Structure formats: structure tokens, C-alpha cells
Image (cartoon, rainbow, N blue to C red):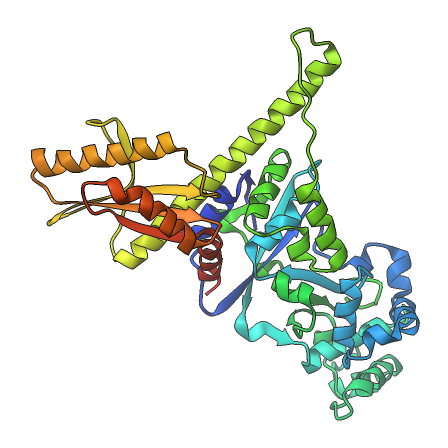
Length: 449
């Protein structure tokens, strides 16, 4: 159980928390984002009495009206997945193996705090779309609201399967699995399964999606309880997303390629994202004689500018951290971070002191090649020359300088561009360019291995 709430206001804080988790190879970790931290872990069909009372009619009505959309779905579970895809209430609950996708969903409503929930599921407990147990729970969707589990006094499974309700369920299952053994364990009907679907649509692929499939308690109108032991709380904390920081986090996620069009890759969502990307943002010009309305507008503008700057700073910090993490693995040694050298009033992003000399690492995050002006480049190069000369002439130490660039554009083009800038140095400087998206993907995949 969670004892405290951990407030999150940036991607960097979120990934730092995940960094501290000791992931086990025997488990797969899934994530779910709630835009409102008060939301319950229950499927959409159970959020309204009218829906669960008519689940069987909803199931048949959508197939009746849109038969072409379901002709390739041979099992009931895959039909439920498609219904979920089109926002029709089902007994499925979406989860993902991508923590940043869950964070995206948790940031959708800026009026209230959100939450990212982590699930720790043993590999042996994960079912696949064609599992018999999955067929049992999926086909409950096709039964009327009067369906219930009637336990016999002897707990005899053979007697249990002779009940009329269970015979109806068996009939539905055998419509898709002709050789299904006519035996249902009542425990399966009361369970919640973690199911990996067939990857037959782009939304599931992009979201790295899976589902919890919910059974019932004793009657169909009551949802099976989610097993709380499968929820993982880092340091006994709930991961609460600060509502005031949601817009900042969404901007950070967009820079990492996680937005509406990547999560929902249908053409209408892609078109909306393109429109928002290129739409002009109107900024008003203010004079000194501001009335109260203009003052309010100026406050809004200043907050927007501050938000953008904070987003850029958070991105740069994250880029630096991930780049140094990767370089540590490549070099096979730890790197001291943020070392201040008083001699030059210069802070090194990374520093390694070995027996044969020193290595200084400077990290730059560049979203565009013109991020740094000509003067800025000259200042950097002059600083490198001074540092190099000092260590060689004064300290008599070997000095190696690595310039580590993180970018979201073509790394080869940027490498060639910067290499020309470094041509005027009086010594050899090692240049390394990393792709930002690749660093993010490596970081998230490492956490789930």
C-alpha cells in the first residue's frame, strides 16, 4: 500500500523515480495514466449502471451496425479490443509498457492532479489473446445482466458446469473455439487477467498496449476486485502528477515525439496535431499605459514565456543526464557530474580523473544547428584552449576533452557542422553526437528489461 504521495512536475523527476526502481527480470512492468488521481481501477462498462445492464446489447449492436469492421476479429477478446479502440465501453482497462505514454494520459486534464500507476505482473500470469481463460471472461460480455455465479455446497466443478447460466457461457465460447473443453472453473470468472492483444492496429502498436480483462464477483453487475498486490508503489509512494505542471510536461513529451498523433495515429488526430504545430500564436504588443485587461494579458504572456523557458531547461537537464549515463556505459567508468573549477570559473558537466590524466566532458543540447551563436561558439572554444593549456603547461597533466552533443536532428549533419567549428582548436577534441530520441528509447527499454 502507498503511504505517501510523490508530486511530479517534470519528465526528469518522473524518470529519476523510475531510475531508482530495481526491476526484476521475472516480471513485466505495465503503466496506466489517470488524468484524475481519484479515478478507480475499473473498466468503462462498470462506470454506469445503464451500460453494464445492457452490455450484451451494446456488444451485438456495434457488430450489427458495423460488420465490416469486425470481420477479421475471430475471437471475442479481439472484438472487445476493437470496441475499446472506438471508445465503446467494455470490460477492458488499457495499460501500456511505455511509462511515458502513461505519463501523457495522466497529463490530459490540467484542472486536477493526475496519477501514473505501475503494475508488477509476473510473466507466468500474463495471458495472450487466444488463451482459453481469456475466452471465458471475454464471452461474459455477450450474456445478459441476469448472469451470475451460483456456488454449489460441495464446490463440485462438474455440478457447477451443469448450471443453465454456465451452459449459456459455454455455448458462446464454443462458437469461437469449437474444441473448447466444456469445463469452467468459477475462480476464473472472478479474476482480473493481464492480456497481451494481437498487434493488428497501429494504436496498440504505438501505445505498446495491453489490457486488464475484468471478470465479475457473484453477479454480472458487480465488477471483480482488482488485486492490489499487483500495484507497485516506488518507495511506498503514489506517483501524483502536479496539475499546474501538466502543460509543461506535455510540451516536454511532444519534443520527445509523444503527442496525440503518435498515441492516436488515425488521420484525424494527425491532422489536428499538424494544424496546432503550424498555427500562428498571436502575441500582443503592450504600451506603458496599460489598463487592467492588458495587465492580465501580460501576466498570461509572461507565464507562457516562463513555462517555455522552464520546459527548455528541463529538456536540457534530461538530455545531459541521459548522455552522461550512456557515456559511462561506453567508457566503463563512473563520471563525476557538475564539477566547478575555480581557476576558470567554469563548471564541467562531466569529469574523470585517471592515473594517466584527466578527461573533461562538456555537454550541449541542440535542437537546431543555430542554437549557439558565433560568439557563443568562440567563447566555448577559447575556454577549451585555456583549460587545455593550463593543464598541460601548469599541471603537467595529460588532458582529454570530450564534447558531447545531444540533438533531435540528423546526427551526421550536425557532427560535420560542429567539426568545422572545432577546426581552429590547438589540440585534439573528441566529438560525440547522440540522438535525443534514441537516448529516451534506450532509457525506457532498459527499465523494462
